[in-house]
Length: 137
Image 1 (cartoon, rainbow, N blue to C red):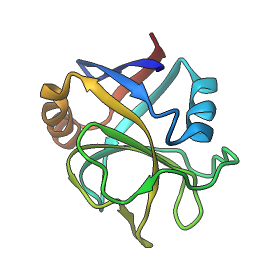
Image 2: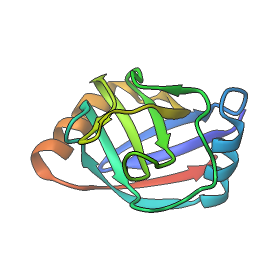
Image 3: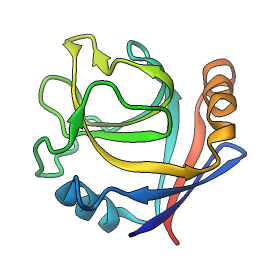
Image 4: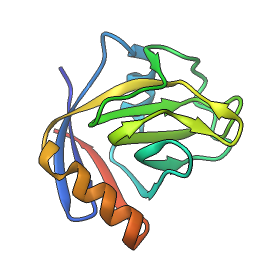
């Protein structure tokens, strides 16, 4: 079980890679670590934040895909109908873009720090982009 430290804005979380359910996505993500980006609030999906990755091609398809991630679940959308992205649900989410409903690979789940998810989401919504860092523990 691979543990990941996630620091987003002023909040710290611990997460577990879903290596059994999304092995290709997890392998690609582990190669990026430590990974630093900006987290912004979603536009269409509801209570979530995302990392837009444009035309990035990780060379993976869909695995363990869902349109309805639970709070604390990260999805990686490998591109296709919309741009490549990573999405974090902090509340109710129906993953979508201007092209319509999407499904992304659920590859990472927060296991510690859930109590700060809503605060992170609201901070991102009202104060703008937050730094996010992923590091293997």
